[in-house]
Amino acid sequence: MNLILYTEMIEKNVSKGIISTYFEKLERNLDLDVAIVGGGPSGIVAAYYLAKAGLKVAQFDRKLSPGGGMWGGAMMFNQIVVQEEALDIVKDFGINYTPYGDGLYVMDSVESTSALLYRAVHEGATIFNCYSVEDVVFKNNVVSGVVVNWTPVLREGLHVDPLNIMAKCVIDGTGHDSEICRTVARKNGIRLATDTGDVIGERSLDVVAGEQEVVNGTKEIYPGLYVCGMAASAVSGTPRMGPIFGGMLMSGKKVAELIISKLK
Ligand code: 48F
Image 1: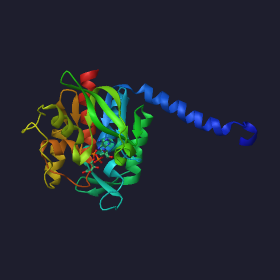
Image 2: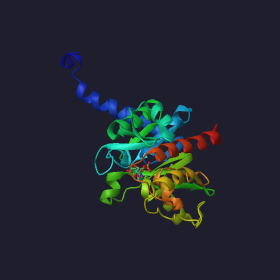
Image 3: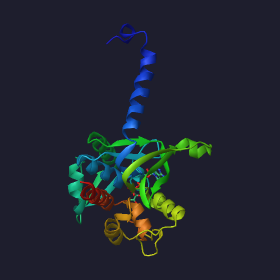
Image 4: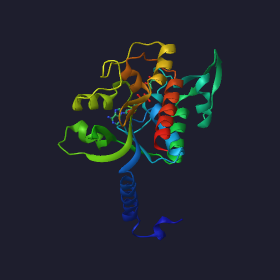
């Protein structure tokens, strides 16, 4: 199509299309079944299965490019490893994989991360990038939503109030820092479902224990608040596992299943 003949107002309409549809999207997502904090692999897998089950789910990542620690493989060698137990999830997302022996498979980390993101959004999840979740909505001792602000606002230290987004369930998928669990425990004088009642902090690397424990630790950690991925390891004090991603994928699927069985 000849854009010059198309309309003399095309400049204005480019802006109008973006603004009006963006605010419609934001408004549609003010009241969610599930708010996922963090766009790492575990959270994206959760978003996919939750959306596939027909739940209204939005995911918030503070970075311009969601995907967390999956893009970079290990030491920027952009390959990742998964184990046999997670292969069904890999197949659900249509990611190519190559057997490597010992029940391990290798995948291209860029293909893998982009496949997770594409399939989650295509299934109906909404991903908001450049959003930082700085707090939760805490009503009647239940986590009931997230409090969001633009990442650049927080980075610049600007004194600008956030917006509130309500959700029946909130997932902390913020990775090693387990930011949402820390915030909920610190601000509200409550006990999380851990041995100490607080965030214990992740242990040094052990692949076998780390992969098992990240799935075991994926749970409702406080009423309304679930935890998955490295955040689950950090909260419960279990080992990190490095660039093997099967546990992340299985943790994301598990948290989705827990929430689906609660809400459906
Ligand atoms: O850490 P991350 O990739 O999450 P994950 O799903 O996966 C961990 C693995 O990548 C890797 C590993 C695997 O064996 O150990 O580390 O647990 O991604 C977490 C995402 O959360 C975002 C952050 O930008 C990253 O993309 N994030 C963290 N805090 C916030 C947040 C916040 N407060 N608000 C919004 N996004």
